[in-house]
Amino acid sequence: MVTVGKFPAAALLAASLTLVALPGATSAQDPMRHVDMSSADMTQPEMTREEVIAVIAASGNRRADLTKKRLSGLDLSGIDFKGADLRWARLNRTTLIDADLSDTKLDLAWLIEANLENANLAKSSLFSAQMSKAVLRGARLNGARIVANLQHADLSGADLRNSDGGADMRNQSMGLMRAILRSANLDGANLAGSRLSKADVEFASLKNTNLDGADFSDAKLAGADLTGASVAGTRVAGADFDSAVLVNLKHEAELIGLHRARNLDGALRSQR
Image 1 (cartoon, helix red, strand yellow):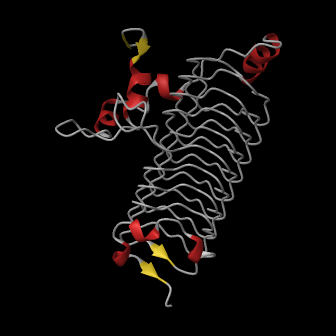
Image 2 (cartoon, rainbow, N blue to C red):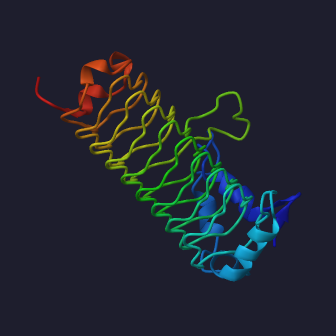
């Protein structure tokens, strides 16, 4: 495994992919060109399903230690990972349907095209996790820390109440870290009370989504479709709505900071 200092090179790359490129720096997406997603490190598991279950069983009351494990492509559906440490793990195209991943540490993990349908990720930590094209239909992410790359992910019907994908401006020494939900499907999801300040939600679909009390301050919502979304108490000051669809919003009059949103004149809005 290639390392930089004490950290795996792939882990440092994962962190870089949730950054906003600084002036004069290489694009935050460029490092992906140097990752061979067909390599054994990214596609081949080093354990079987039975071995994973055995590690969890042997951990007793301690966190099961699955850090840096290569588990890509396995069927781990229904397994109870609750509280496990999966930091830096490779779970690309892994099937985790109905798995219990609540309170797990998935920071810097790779879950590209993983299937987490109806999985429980409540209160999990997904800091800088790579989850592009992951399937999270009906998944529970309430209270989770989701500063992750979820581009093109399917989160339709997911529970993201009180989740946190917003930028922490007190700790941005590496650049602007926040959730990336560009072109994600969030139709019918519940994001009530979630924090997505400065998040990238461009071109995402949020049709009939519950956004009550959510914080989208300074978020990038250009091209996003919010048709039929409920927005009671949703904070949008500084949010960019260029080419966004804001039709048939529920409780639109209760939006907070709409007068301070950007490019609102470029959005498609209901006739009033």
